[in-house]
Amino acid sequence: MSLSPETNFAIAVDGAVVGGIGIMQQSDVHAQSAEFGYWLGQNYWGRGIMTKAVNEMTGYFFSHFDLVRLYATVYDWNPASARVLEKCGWEFEGRLKMSIFKDGKYCDQLIYAKLRR
Image 1 (cartoon, rainbow, N blue to C red):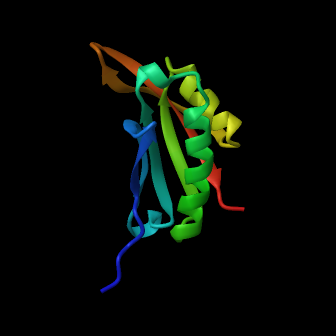
Image 2 (image 1 turned 90 degrees about the vertical axis):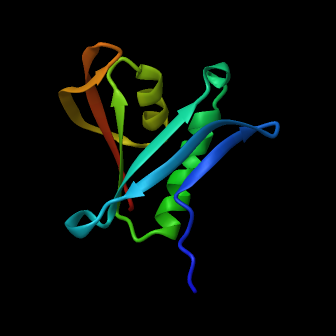
């Protein structure tokens, strides 16, 4: 029996899980694309942890899956998350206006992508 590579990982600091990172591979005509997502506990923001994780995991997913494109969405009110992707070489592709309803209000999503070169 063949096992598939892992798609979701915990982010640990000093043995404690403080975040997560992973992909959801798409299907059919989108099968070579995957949605990339991540989160980090607020106490660990600003330490470069997520930039390192995104860099490492981008390479992992491209090397372990038949993907040509990873994409991630960021809430427009979260510039720190957008900056993580930009520092890792992801490109801004566009804005989905009023596409999220969170905390009682609508917000836009920013779409970033990284292509296998």
